[in-house]
Length: 443
Image (cartoon, rainbow, N blue to C red):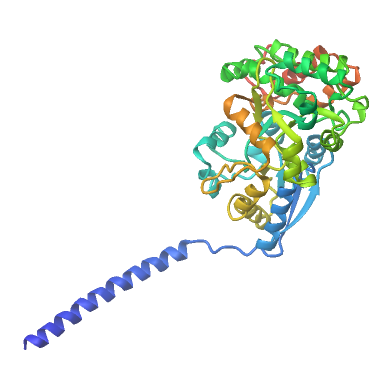
């Protein structure tokens, strides 16, 4: 009798457990039913307006994306200058599925990202930045909606130099612009061209000026840019005019190469590596590209980098293309828009570690660490960690015109530094008024 009761009791317990398991399975099934089935994008082709100056690590990443996902990319490299080329097509109504675009205030406003680009706030990368890089979204997207992804270490502007020339002439790294000019004079007297200018390409000339500006506003960037963005000050103030005049003094002293008006970014690589010139204003992608061409060991042997501003070794940082800044324009095609989101998921997720290692820059995302092997980049990062200021277009709220074109005209002798500053000020005022920015009503 007791045996029978025990058996019955066991049966009841088992029945209860089975019922509980059944309920859990049913609940799980309901949850699964609520999860959207992952879409198969195999064979979908996405158009991609890509910055033609992107290093090989980016191109390799995009190749792996196609191989791993089955989504094809129709890559359309931009003609230089990238910004004007893309904006001309944009103005005609063309929209790619993916677009390299500068994540700086003056460039964002020109494509009106909130209206024209996908809100990707719900993608995993948004919450995966390392704590020290969370400022990227906070600074670029203060309203909390994310319209683009910056997936590489901040760009850093400094001066690249030929180590062999410095060693042969027993030269020391300058601590400010005055010492830099003394260095240039010593190099020139030795029969070597101190500096290279990419006047034909125009865009590299911005580095010559921008790295010198950071000393002026790094101490109080909020107040500095509030005054710029409300029209209280403009580009004629010393913070911009003095660096422009400093670069002009380099031109007047004959520190740039004789054929500077036909100088290009590509030719600068050869000139510096071969020792035809001693220095070139550049960002960290310059030694990356040199490493693609000559190998890391050779670049480490021949090339170094240092920070330079008007009064210190402060470097300038920014979040811009080539490559690292991606936005997804709205196209009206739901399938392609969803596939473009998969592109962002891939470059910030499955494909990121290999990319960051190839790029040889520190990772901005959690769970990935990179040992930087390219020594000139490691040197520049040391300057960045020690003392840095934001690249000036990062924080301006309206377009300021074709800075690179006006600089090329200054190098050619048809504009003065004051002319360039005036053109920048006029363009900023005109565009700020068009945008209805506060403070510009009566200016």
